[in-house]
Length: 358
Image 1: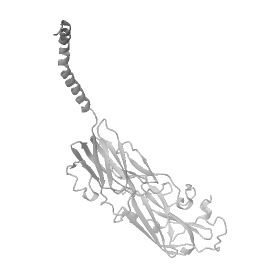
Image 2 (image 1 turned 90 degrees about the vertical axis):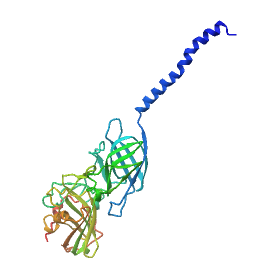
Image 3 (image 1 turned 30 degrees about the horizontal axis):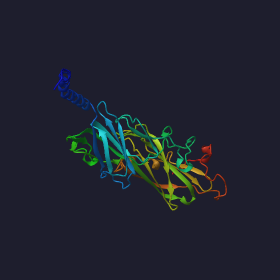
Image 4 (image 1 turned 180 degrees about the vertical axis):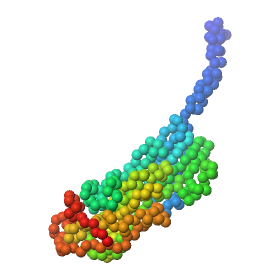
């Protein structure tokens, strides 16, 4: 039998019980509203297709930068070991992308806060770095005529990379634009690529490989050490548009004698800006085994390789040829026991170096 006391409390509990489902509905609505404003994370796969690369050399790994094109998203960097790529998790949204190899040692980066300002460059250097292990003093060293005021910077590493634009990432799928170099023209008017969860990137060579040979070198057996340089080259590369810097610089690099009749070398460069009129002049610096030092190319027409650089069939792979060079015959016999037989740190280069005109 229900007492008045129990009856009173039951009447008070009934409204509370009726309110419980309503409170659950309100709570669920609040949860949905919060979820609507939450960043949705999407798992996707990045793949690298290397069909654009002519040279068989490959990097040890790659990095990928996602630059957001809408508020509320962060710039993200992902690093991969090897050449295949891998899976990442990133917030849904609109992005631009840059990728390049992450195994470089000689280059520096700046402007990394945005896609359009991301830049690669190299430090200042010495004309004789390849033979002095880091000596950066260029005071008094003969330079090619008209290039005396150019900065000297070291050669970059080999670099590969590309960019992708109009990237939209959502839980429903991915759309983006990134195509091989050979297909870029025909893709200009086409819509973005649409995939379920994969972005395919097509890295290509961002830097150039230059090789050279100086043929028919007389008295080559007297060469103890040699190094070389090339003027009028680009100092940096803007990665997004692959735009070269416009201030010409001189690059130092190694030179090797075969001991018979030829001096050769290979070096990496960002390339040359095709719109600039600056000449490309090589300089060769030679130390002979009697302790003398000579420079070649300051005014010699055959060391002006401008036409060879500009007319190269492949701007990424340039081969330069200089035909004919006379190394002075030593007056004094070589003496390996004399300290300073090879001394690039002499202050008064005017007394040691002489231009040899052919």
